[in-house]
Image (cartoon, rainbow, N blue to C red; front, side, top):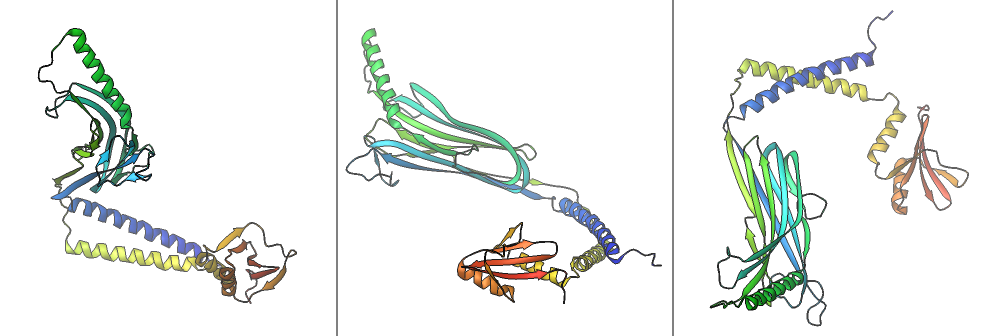
Length: 360
């Protein structure tokens, strides 16, 4: 009576034992590498905000419909709306926990003509979108797809703010008349829109706090206008980390390599033996299903032989050639006792069948 373990079961136990040994070796290696390379290791990050705009004119007889080329100056009397896309990407030298927030806004600004940009007499701020979240990753990527993540595509209608500008000018002039105020040297007002996109990136673990604010400035009280960029479109950050090193002697390294190599050899040798199906027909079927998976459609029942005149091919590759010429997928039924491959060609059903129990 054989009291030993069956060959298959013994192979599995040996594979598990080798896998556990290899896992221990890998954990030891990861611990060593993580501590060794953290000494004087540079952590860096880089982020870039990308903006683009498209100006669309009202229907007219001079300019064709569609975005006006961005290298041109634009005419406010023709402008219908402006589309602005904002996207953002950031890369980090290692995976880290990152929190982010996003805020986009539109500012309607009125300032006296001829004064510095920081002086103004009126402004109205409209929030376009806000978002926030956190992620553990080496990379951030926010597109302009309006999918709820930071960034997006926004449509600006300058005419509605031009109306607000004229209302302000009218009310201010009326107020001067009502109060009998003389405006010596007063040259009037100018209006503009500022569309700003602000991304804030934080990683408290490494002390990262970056604010990227970038946008466009659009004058609305001139007929001929250009769209100018404002703000800072990117950031660059880095720091150094130091950690204690674990010294490994040459004998320790040799023992580690020998144990790891023996475990890997044992795993692959036993898995190769365990994965071999003793049935050659099942091996053939498995090979076909893997190799031609994109051309094969699996069905839950075998083909209905009563509807077609059947033809049996002697080689599966003949069925592949037929499917390619007819631009059809190969139908397949994979049962417990046999696997059937079929292609319909007019009134014929071409078959290739492998019986698992017939290994003659």
